Amino acid sequence: MTDQKITTELFFERTGLDPEQVETVVNDALHNSDDGELFMEYSQSESFAFDDGRLKSASFDTSQGFGLRAVADESTGYAHGTELSTEAIKRASQTIQAVHMGDSGSLADAPTQTNTNLYTDSSPLNEVEFEQKVKLLTDINSYARAKDPRVRQVSASLSGSWTAIEIVRPGGERRRDIRPLVRLNVSVVVGEGDRQESGSDGAGGRLGYAQFIDPENWQQQTDEALRQALINLESIPAPAGEMNVVLGPGWPGILLHEAIGHGLEGDFNRKKTSAFAGLLGQRVASPGVTVVDDGTIIDRRGSLTIDDEGTPSQRTVLIEDGILKGYMHDRLNARLMGHAATGNGRRQSFAHCPMPRMTNTYMLAGDKDPEEILRSVKKGIYAVSFGGGQVDITSGKFVFSCTEAYLIENGKIGAPIKGATLIGNGPDVLTRVAAIGSDLKLDPGIGTCGKDGQGVPVGVGQPTMLIEGLTVGGTGA
Image 1 (cartoon, helix red, strand yellow):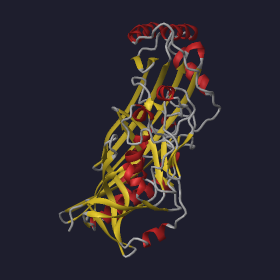
Image 2 (image 1 turned 60 degrees about the vertical axis):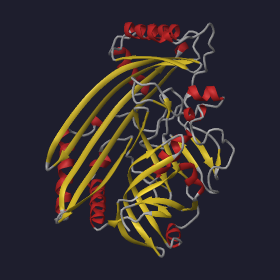
Image 3 (image 1 turned 45 degrees about the horizontal axis):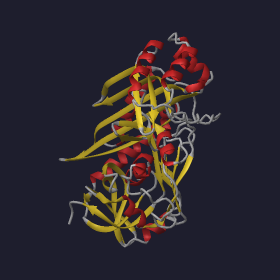
Image 4 (image 1 turned 180 degrees about the horizontal axis):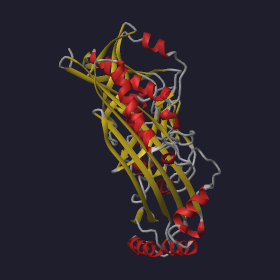
């Protein structure tokens, strides 16, 4: 079934909405506006959580609704509701008139069309029976506990969603997308005596459940979570001070996402609250540093066929060989800055306004052998995985905690360390990149980004990277 048939059935045939009436309401509501749209959404989601040897929770949810937006200059009027009816949309149109439109807005052109499909339109929720999903979590628990007698707790969760959207603009322009999303997480706690440590691993993407239920894949995830936990069980307190830090490939790109990526979103730069504001065309990073945001990667968690304004996703070069080349834009900020929209207008749901957000943001590979990078460090830290962190967008200052890290001593990986935090300034860190590995890796599909109270799925990635003179917080001598 095509996307058009799916959305026609969900938003019009099922609800009784008349397409021509909807188009008339949208035309009237956005008269004299500079931009805007009707965003309709239908979503089904489910989640399962297994802990302490039993299924703790299982949920299923269906939601639907619309958001009607009118934009005039910098002002936005937005109203949303869960009732898909002409009357409800008319009431919303009256609400957004609170935005002063003036006498003659200049309506922005509609986004270009795309025939690209980056993921299946099939629902993962219907792919596997309920019993198989529960059995998967049960099997993970049994497998982990049988692997090592030090395993004290196993937690596993499985979640999936299927979302259909249709965007209606003045003049009857329509854009549609069908978005699947799944994720499997495994967490293991191990202990010896009074000491306990944990490890975790996750994977996901815009695809079905099949590969996650494959024993080869979930056993690999469980092995990885157990490996991390056992390594942490042997960890020693992290040292503190300024030292060279080698970041591993893949998930450590979350530091790049938080400390640098947010500062390259259009709204912060238009308002000049980003550390990167006004620096287009200038050197902001070491030579060799190239950072892109790419929403076009097949089946990836952060990918989108179109964004939540209808703009096709694209690959946007943000920093090229150390030079700032561009920002990530939604339609509003692109128009006000005189730039082109980049397909980064995203919203958590129909109840939220779109704003510039990342998709899959990562640093391109360099030409250094990762082993050679490690051998070049006499004393430092090798950070393989991160947990939580905090970032100040205006200053670029960040603090990130390492969930797996090691000492580097005379070019060799040494003892695992616990309690290490990386402290620095995003723009400054970019200038301290001394070596970039050839081993670019994307994260396994677990990222969720928060901004202004909205969460959206994202991807991150990077190759092995050496940063010189980074501050490390720790509890060791």
